[in-house]
Length: 261
Image 1 (cartoon, rainbow, N blue to C red):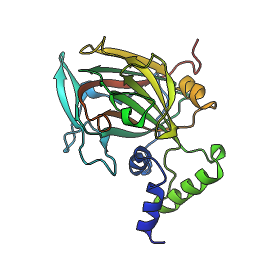
Image 2: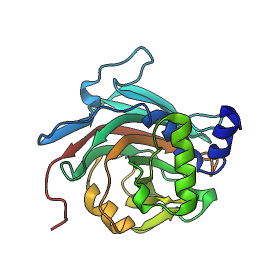
Image 3: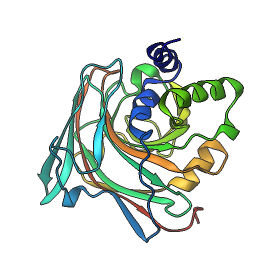
Image 4: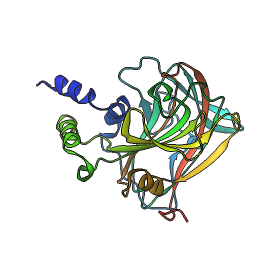
């Protein structure tokens, strides 16, 4: 089997999002040191790269999706933020970074959306679109994988030199599901979806959200979380064919208790 055949074999057996994240987190993101606050998305003090992206962030695109969401750095309420415009499209921005969730169990971010999707539905593949989401990728743990998964991930390691992410948590703004709904992604149970905003009542309003990622991972997967390997933002509408605009403010991780009080 040639290398291209191996890549095709692996890609056809993992969801598109995992394959896309694979190419962006395998290059060995730098570890971070302990402190009270870790600024992962310091958009309000943005240093722009030659590609027009925030420093340290890269495009996250998908193999079978040709129309991409547009991401730009804009001014809103006197601060630099990321604006995402999606029209029957899907892509994201990702930062490769290794974070120990036992040291930084709390994640905080700001976001704002123009609208929710009429046909958005976290339980269906056809409704798996969100005007805003925060995507957290976690390191693969061979001890938690079945025989087939181990074979797939070992194949990826042989091709790329490292394992792809083993699991992920998505914090989403959903169309109608109740707050704190936790369900597997309709494409893969390795990705858990958590509803942190729902419905249109708070559209066009900046919202600050904070979650205990350590506790959320424990509740979703029933085990302690491995290292975080990447953080992404994504506004997508390829499944519903609809359109939305979202704004993302700063994303930080904070030290604190690993369990919710």
